[in-house]
Image 1 (tube, rainbow over the protein chains, first blue to last red):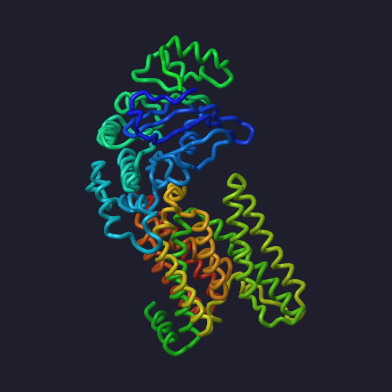
Image 2 (image 1 turned 90 degrees about the horizontal axis):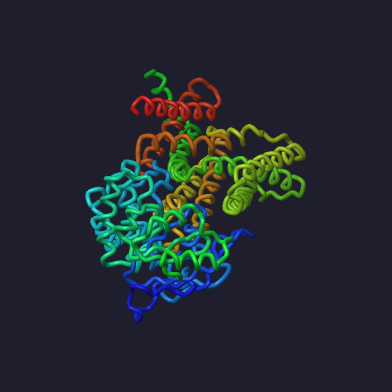
Length: 264
Length: 282
């Protein structure tokens, strides 16, 4: 697969570049021959069935895992060397909802690399408050995390990522387990961010893909990049897990050609 | 009731033993309240209990070797410190490396430490060792030196927590994110375990192994039911621990019964009331 260079200025350096990346947990191959690039200003949505390798790919991009084959480069360097350039938003439901901290304390965690010991500086607090304001949570700074709704917690986590002053954002299923009204607010916040920041997002939410994505990376052991909008048949294939590694690669080429999709 | 407390207050003024015990209780409240809040928030109460129990191995070994090889410097405190550090290294490594079997392996370390301690004490030559004083402690045997040593430890623990507070909290809340921000999550996990071990080791003399474990967990767990701010939980936990120590000491002095069990009873009572209160209000 060759890197897709569809929507961005080809003279800009690649923000993310994966070439021939493979990863296996023990003997189980999770990803194979993953190649794609992400340019500055692009918004890329990762979709695919559970167990298809989306979370693994995110961890490779964050430098939390090392590829077993190929190479991942972020800003031209190994991800583990540029972690502070990335803002990561995990799923809010992963956390202990009773953890005794206020929203501002969580946002300040985005500035952890700026302190060695002791207290956060005034500048750190200003950045954290600005980040909260950016996601519409300015009045919630002192509210305990446990008092917030699912959507509010998710926005606090987005603010925490923004407090890192990142060059791009990686979000892991930001709309999972939140209701429709809150989802609309979150999409609004993310749409504002998209105007000034590169976003890479894992999601099952096709509304979110339609609202924010420039293109879609279908991850199911192999990856395929699709421009938007996706056809109904493509979506069905992605989530039914038909595009799996064990398929003959030629079959993939034929299928994708039939659906007029781009190959990475 | 008034006479009861008046009598105890008189004793505090006139009996140095009671005064030192009360002072030791106050200082240990600081340590237990602060470290306990971090332990309960991080959900590693069973790890703290395992560290507390496994140091009996070090106490037993120090008694045995000091008597057999005539090593007067090898006091039970030295043995407890060494055993505490070994437990921290082992338990920390196990919980980071073997997450899926963590509870089983930690249970094994806990039991092995106690078993080794009992065997060492059994085979120690000379006068029989009062095992009960290590397991349940005896705050009434607290000396001035114990108070000074506990105070020194308390200051070290408070300083470490104040300096690394934000990183300790961040690692407890979201280890993965803290790692992404360049925080050595393993180092901070070991720091928390080491703080727990230091607290337990130096308070065993005053509180005993089982009481130390109860005082680390119960007041902080009680406090966490009334506040959603870690700092406030720490302050409430310190106050509850101080109350437990003082009420337990007063009752045991007046009724002439062992102090340790009464301190534990008061801590359990506080926790039970908080549990019922929260169930009623939610």
